[in-house]
Length: 335
Image (tube, rainbow, N blue to C red; front, side, top):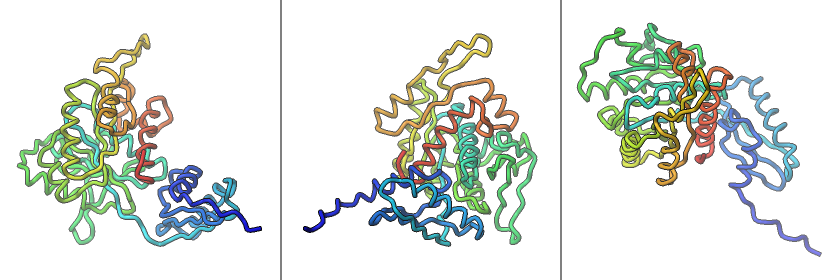
């Protein structure tokens, strides 16, 4: 009597099951994952790892996958190739919606997940990242040939570059459009070391910096930030249209300043409304990444250069949740 035919393979489902069993840091290294005749076959990038770290990576993958049903053996191939550095833009159509704070905290949360992250402060006229990442007063070095800037290491495990590191504090920049484009190129093309992910904190609007970015440094994806009120959503829609015209995938929308808890009585109020961004995302069939409440603690932490995502407090949770969704998109292309 002949054996019944094997059911057809489902490669996408196989890879999803494998990735679900692995940590985000390991998922970031995966090049392919499949199951063949009850054998998990894994290809992962390890070009930057020592021999001991490679052995630890193999052991971690094996330990995570062996208990899965339908897998009798785990085979792992580690490659010396490195993925190209990826660029994610964080934008908004309007100023004052907390975009820079979100960028900083996403970068810190991703770094704590094991990602090698850098932040580019694309707001040439109003840079915020030196304060948010506690790197004020630090001047970037240059590479030995003098051709590139060297990204600055922050104490939060995130590299950063900003015009705020180059121009004297408090000095106003009276630059025309072409100069801002050159400044952005200088920051993006800097020596970012081992980083494999750059978050670009864009200025508000759809002007010269955004157009220079799309023409010379097309991002791999974009995260849009808005407060819930209609006026901010109108501007966010314009920013989204710019990315769509540039064929940049919109990863999702974030609702910021979504509620305020009174530090005295604990009552929640919604000075900017509530749920507007989520409804907007649903109407446009764009993923909703999450909401971040308006809190005094987050503002104070930002002014001190201590992003909430660097700790374990209540204020860290929204940023970590959004970072996890962004990490999932980076690994799988879906939220």
